[in-house]
Amino acid sequence: MGVWKPQLFGDVSITRGPIRLRSAFTLIELLVVVSIIALLIAIVLPALGEARKAARLALCMNNMKQMGFATGTYAADFKDLQWSFTWRGDDDSRQSQYSDLRQSGNSLQAARNQAVDILRRRGAREDMIRMLSWIPHVYYSHLVVNDYLAQQLPEASVVSPADRDRKNWQERPTELFDNGFWLPRQPSPSDPSNHRYPYSSSYELVPAAYDRASQPGERVRQSTAGHYFYIAPFNARLGGVVLTSVAFPSQKVQMHDSEGRHFGKLSPWMGYDICRQPVLTYDSAVTIKISADYNPGWNPGIPEDPAPFPVLYRPQAWESPTLNGEPFEATNGKVRWTRGGLLGVDFGGSEIDTGQGPPR
Image (cartoon, rainbow, N blue to C red; front, side, top):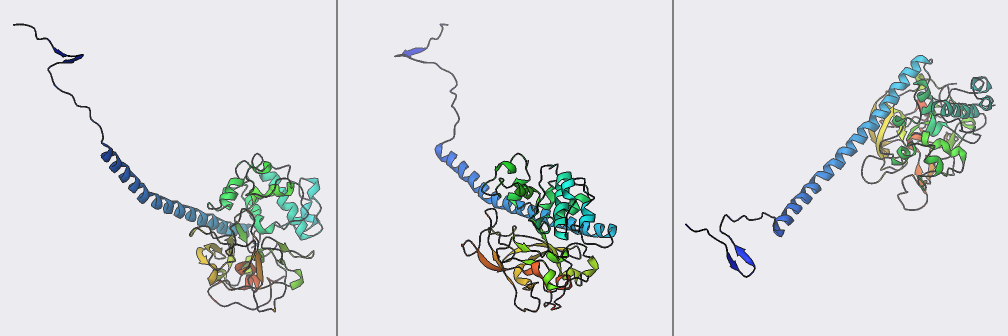
């Protein structure tokens, strides 16, 4: 039997044997697969986004809940006092280990000294300067709780997980914030007093929680310059408010965010009626409220005036814009300025026109 040889046709040889076909996608098949993947992503991404929003809201509410727990434990240790700055004069300031913080003259300067003392010790910020023009109670009262719990600063739990800017500021503040890394969405670092901002909170303690003055001329009140600015007279009586001053704990807000960050694309400032956000009440409950349901509040400097005091919202670069698209807009302080202070009601009932603050 002879040996078979391949037949040659030009320069191509043909051999006998099994034919192997190369598998591949056709263009139509590839487009179908890509379309299915895109459809699945379109279905899954919104669900993941909603899950992330729900997780941020739950964490935010837990942050506030922990502050409510701290209210109870702090009061148990310190004669039923609401936590806030406790230094009220030179006798308190002299306990500081820093010589430049040992003189105050009044309760407001004593509170400033105490805040800087905590920032230096708990935040390893020996470079934090003594401040002479600042009301630390607005966004920094929590420092007293941080010090009470021996926490190192900055402390993540005082910032809403939806507050992107403050979360950024907390990241290596001496390296980033102090060198203007987050500009324009941060205060100018050229002013050394602004180095305090990475240690601020998303949550505000209502003024009645630290203002124990009963006379209008002594009370802290809103400045007409904007929502950021407060006026504190030299004879202000700050700190030392007792929790038994609260007449309606379940209807009185203790802490709230400065913005409604968790619902919808807008994050409206708390003075707008559409602002929806979790709030901590004095019974340590955290509930979600909309600003439209709050009582309108008052001007604590003119308690007999039945009209609510308008608050000029003038947002900074890192704050939510106005709803009218202009640089500023008249809004309302609402829970920030409850008529009657801690004796008043924020929601669930009409205003209580006592015209008084907490007892002396």
